[in-house]
Image (cartoon, rainbow, N blue to C red; front, side, top):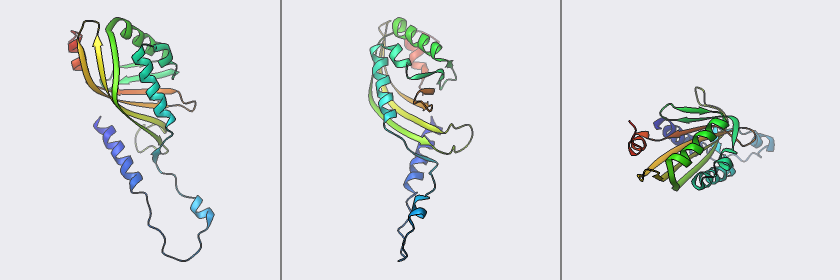
Length: 184
């Protein structure tokens, strides 16, 4: 989580520091020179990705797992910060259908923050270029056993060229969830 926050802060700093001072010469500017600005490594992306994320939370909250999972690619990967993962749309759908019908009585999301970014040039390592949606939100959940929890979640979603989610990474502390469910 710290790496993601540092990454986002660094991206914002990069974007903020990318402004160049105005030229003080009286020479005429060549339109082709101004059009040849270098592409920044990271930039804000289309807000349609925020709309997709918001719609996903509405669908998950209402229990519409089929609608929610329709935004994923067939070979999508769903990862948690604990190292667990699900591979494939069918596995993701099966997990969440089971969770919503057998474990979760109700779930809602609030205080959501959305940051769509486009990675033009990976910074280091296996960072995937393309469109990402970074989000933070408060989860209010009531489990079938009567226990209730409120906690923050950070989610990163990567979109393929068809605007489908191919990677979702969710950062949360599973200890309070496991405790509420009577798990070790």
